[in-house]
Length: 148
Image (cartoon, rainbow, N blue to C red; front, side):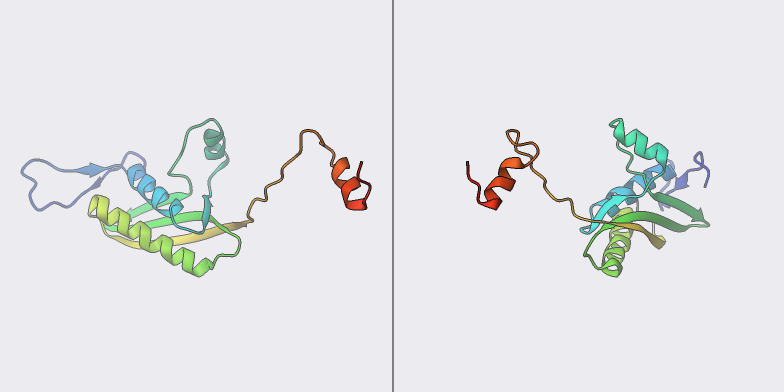
């Protein structure tokens, strides 16, 4: 879909005019909805979107692609999931959440949500470093029974 094309909302009473939505708005709605699902670690994106995020610019469209063919709205979402979650359940929740949010915010009906799981992210483990014992020598001495 071209970036310049707009999606016109069907409204029975168009006496005030028409309402148009840019596809990138739908991508943002879908991106936020998907990232809020429990079990989604992060959205998949291009190198450019990763660099933008490092520079402090949040790109909620990251990992989302919209296709509109004759009022058939198809959304493709690329995600990373957390290790240990049920991938089919998380994917189904993503599909339901995106359909719900797009319908709620725009009155558009999403015909298809395709979820592409690009990877699994392991939980980060806290590693604390004692500033007085950077190399862990005192800890090793205590474990060996050499209390000083």
